[in-house]
Length: 269
Picture 1 (cartoon, helix red, strand yellow):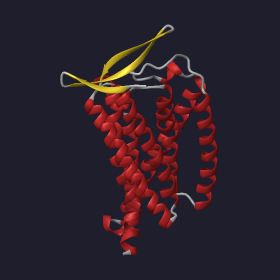
Picture 2 (cartoon, rainbow, N blue to C red; picture 1 turned 120 degrees about the vertical axis):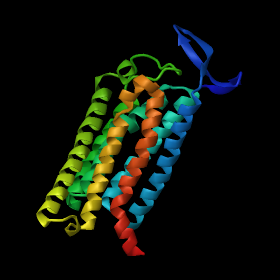
Picture 3 (tube, one colour; picture 1 turned 180 degrees about the horizontal axis):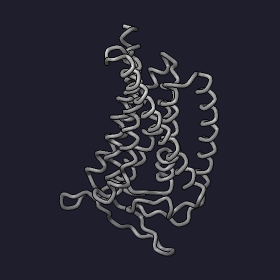
Picture 4 (cartoon, rainbow, N blue to C red; picture 1 turned 135 degrees about the vertical axis):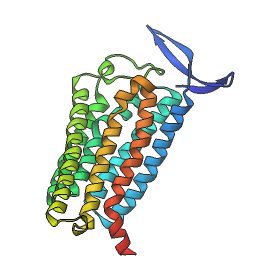
């Protein structure tokens, strides 16, 4: 449990520090910029999740359904980071942040990209499998034992607190789907270039196909941005790196989500 106080124009949070069997109350500085960026990512992700959910409710498109789940996970992870940067890390907060971000989110993003190309039957089967795997992952992360206690003022590393299974779930749940997203983006882009070359001009290809390619490419770019938090951590600090990549990534993701449905929305009006 922690609370924020202000000393000499600087904000600090009161955190509980465990030393051996004794608990002490200490003051830790609060990075206002990091807190603000995490808040922006959380609020923007929530707004985008509501918009995508509304589109899925009205049109029942498979990619909207998958991206709705991804955005809810994205918003949940962003809120967890917001809470941690403001009040301090704890076991529950890090489990939420790690599960929604590192383990589950990218897989549902990948399902949305697949849904832009695959048949509805194929997407339904993949969705059922992914739902089962997500349930299994949630169970694992809920009961996974901790190797050592969390320190409120230190950004946690999964390798320091969890065993092999949670870290394997994160590696598989993020790595393979990211490759799928990037692969689909490159494949769709190469097909578009090939079609334009065969038609002899840029105006001969379908506008809808161009939008699908743009959506795949934007989602792939957002995935790369979100993955860049590790490289930025050395320069900005780990919490700042995650706050920056979440804020930038969520904007790119939303643009990619909305691109395929712009044409259908124009037809509806």
